[in-house]
Amino acid sequence: FFSSRRRHTRSLCDWSSDVCSSDLFKNVEIKRVKDLGLELSGNQLALILTIGRSESGFRIQASIYPTGEQTFLPPNVKLMILTEEGEIFQEVASQENDEVIRYRFGAETGDKFQVKVILKDDSFLGKFQL
Image 1 (tube, rainbow, N blue to C red):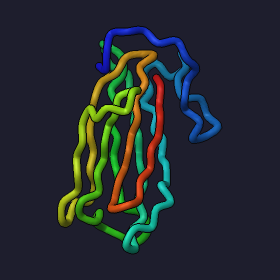
Image 2 (cartoon, rainbow, N blue to C red):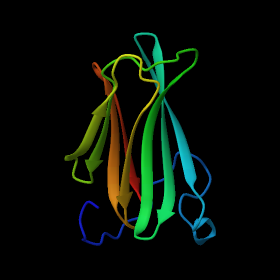
Image 3 (tube, one colour):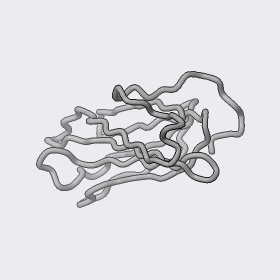
């Protein structure tokens, strides 16, 4: 996905106390929900990261949803997938009346990536390793 180089570092999945990657979860999708804690123009956002196995490694979906009583995302919420080095791999942005924005991609064991969410001057950056 990002490169074919092997990286040897520890797993970075500390959003909750449960295990991120284990032989017990070979065929199970794992979801992580992160309340970004951002109140932007009266809008709160949640990042949901879904990880599932595929024949070539993992399939990942990063999604941004409004939380609370909001039905729609504010326009121009940016969801960015970054490489380990911080280079933009893919970027999507919300438009008027979007209920969710998401991006799907594949990765291999050991790959590192970052997810960045931006609205105006506020942002969130999460770093992950499979």
